[in-house]
Length: 308
Image (cartoon, rainbow, N blue to C red; front, side, top):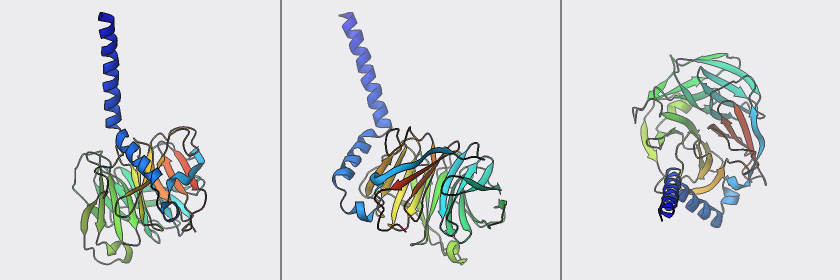
């Protein structure tokens, strides 16, 4: 009897631990929305990004010349290249679409660079997680350094935990607004509009709101490490490091599709270890950078009608 009680107690404890882990990692929510997305794709296979069609064509390629701390990512359609940041020491990097390093630019005046987004021409926005600041910077083709100390800037004093600040930024060209993600405690997606100054050099009429899913009571990721607004569809892609997920949402916040970055899924040999940056090219390719220095490219088959 005593052995049976011990055995029951061990199994009971194991079940409690498993249930706690499942709840912590939001597995029930993920399972519910994953099933709904598979069963009710609607027209999103054609009109959306539709992440189930993607497969890794570059899997965990090390970025030569970058040793650690690869973070945010953005695609510059004018140069056809990717720009990312290294958080320590603060650096901007430019990559080609194969993940080869083209140049490194010292980023002066930033404590903890985590996100970057292309706005227009040579204009970008860089986020500093530690100081909760957003900086508008210009990256000239022949530059080897960028100094933010004389740049236009914006600080948002919201949930000011030192290392749980702005993890990613993305510019919405169509509606002239900026999306910013906060990592956790709580997870937030901020929508900052009234920013014609970023696109035209005019005065800023600032409005800040919080983007939320219209159908989900909570995002089913445990953290947010980056995001990108896909201009061709108007859909928002959110990246989670801890959950190893990319999730596609409509403009009004409906979850559409998901890309689990787990070993054996979507052509990946192993789980993406610490996904920190996300970008989409005009041809539909999805790019991810992962700490310390790993580069991934996912391509869609069949090609989408919106792809260039």
